[in-house]
Length: 279
Image (tube, rainbow, N blue to C red; front, side, top):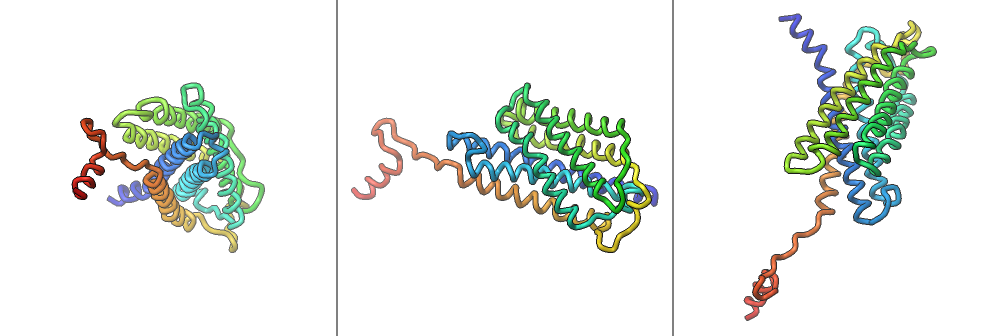
């Protein structure tokens, strides 16, 4: 019984990481679709419309939040990475760089959504995710940073790229593009991408070899356990807030239903009711 509880406790951070990552992918890709609709209504490129630019930044923020939170949630699962500490300045810089790293691939996604663009977008997002994960581990503690095993990093990048390519193909080219069940397929695509990204993050953690100087506690830095709790609570709340704002925007942008017209008289139903009342 005790061993079962320990196994559940060790798997719980990874399960939360997958859930946060799936929510981030769903919010991010939904923001990209809304940015496209806003640009189509204005008949201008995405980057030339202010609302589309904000939506694209929101998509980058959602993906960066999910990637960073999933990485932080996976740190306490290993004895070596559980001893890491992070400075507040490094946290702000890592968050900003994560947002910037996601933008080029998302901008390409707004321009093309076909079989030819799936692999380049997936490769761009995978490289950005890999850079974010390596940046988190490199910024931990004091000293020169970890030594990297090239083979494990290559496997992590390949896993992320193939997972994201399958996600994008399912969400934008396959069954998630149109149809009555497209929303379910998009959720399934987000879940698939989340599992692949989190598995890739575990490979990045396995690729890092930390010197003893990086594991020494520093008074001015935030320990991993505290950071994981904050990420597990604040990241889902931020993503849900962005999802709520996106739903409000869709409702405000939805066209008003037109009144039905009578085929015999040519007048709308509301006009006939008004005329009957006046009479």
